[in-house]
Image (cartoon, rainbow, N blue to C red; front, side):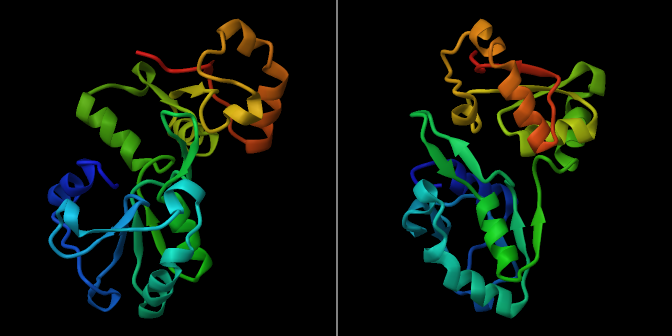
Length: 205
């Protein structure tokens, strides 16, 4: 992430050491889409990826991905999400899109994060809770709701998130107004194959 302390912190916590070339790499780590880390691991060592975060265009990194495929190394993608919603309401593009592109080019991808089940179990183990005491909150039917359904916990679908335009739902939409869109929501759930146990227009705390 550019201008975000989580990037260097993530590298430090995982003890991953960035390298200068694909030839030196043992694997690709996809944990953001705004830049490529080079040796050193500080903010000054982040090479920006033009346009991808804002547009989803992977052209700027396709050469690197092709080189990695040719070398036969795996990509580890720690966020399968493809699209997210920024605080301003615009869509931005995140690491799952890199995973999809790498697979399209012939590479092998290992995903961690929803809808994968390991993270759900880790949360329950850490919090010492059972499934009946937990609800997973998220705005992606493909990732949040599918993950919760597969794992067997309740899900709270946030309708104003990545599917907000499809449902004409915004964060200020009232629960009553959202209830009037039940037909549209049921059609969307059926199309995706993933139906949540609960629905809210927004998640505010």
